[in-house]
Length: 488
Image 1 (tube, rainbow, N blue to C red):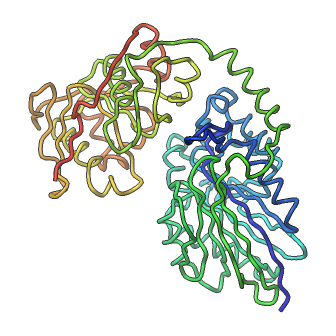
Image 2: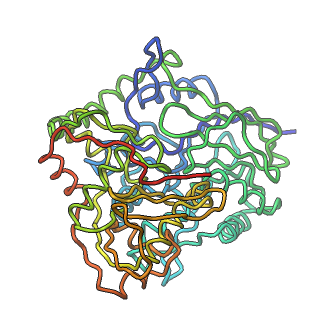
């Protein structure tokens, strides 16, 4: 038996998590690129055949990333020198042309097999890469989540094979084309969420020889890999607080993993010497940002929190109220996922605000019947949406939506204590991303938004709206008011 040991380190959903934080009773440093790089360097010096891979969402989530539109992140990733990465949905946040620019900045291959230029049936990215390590050929294939279609909904020439069945076919197409190359190890780098990773694994033909799926998107923390259809499936949570580690023994004769050990390694003080050179590199970006963004925008009456995107939050209430006032509507919806901070304040700097709400997007105003509005709430508050990876919303003041989880239906909806009437017309504010994907997120025809009156854009920058409001208001307070109520 001709075997070789490989160590595969993997990260996902790093989201610009550059800096270590003090945590715990003893104030240990946890996470950050300096400690992460230190650990990667340590493993590279101790083990003979080391690969480091990233399963999407390198960008978005820090003020440094926002200011430099991901270029700083890719430069820092170049310093970490991953062997290969795949796309996550947030790699598209700065637009498709900018993504193609970032791909050129990267010193490492970024692979994706199922994103296509539709009119020409050409893949947009390099679909796979083969890395030769110690005489063994290792094939990496990238697969992305359906959400990329949402982000690219304005570009009708770009599309994707997004269903699991079609993703499976893409994997088969590539593995079939390279059977004769004697691939020793086949790894899928995915950004489709852990549950979908398991479904995809169950659908793959064992003859295609996929050995491992390293995933992202759902921020899943595991104690051990899942094994489905003989395929090992792992993910490493979110950020830089931890890193996944596979130690695998690969048989060259059977092209398979014959032994493996997987660990989720906490990245904390003492695990390895920090990489001080990388810290200096990060500081060069940080200094630029601090000079520009270390100014006080406002002060809240108390710290406002956003602990869970699936429930009503203080910070979500504030942003929804700001949108409602700006658009002069009956109800404003704010996508919970667009709020990127767990808490904000009480003192709010411009940098804090940009980190908490980094997205530049439009605000749309449109008109719907009470029946349509009722259906909107019924859809996003549903049990199915709550347990899935669907879109969730924060809503403006005056709303009281009561949802019965046992019956799985909306029981009542009122605005300023007046029940919503199906025949009445109501004005709604919604972010551009959610407006453009209205039919998918709310399961209501997009034509319903145009039948009463033409919709219009009331602002081309939601972040400008929030910043201007906060500049003019001090000692702001928000509480959990019971705008979204779930009963059993």
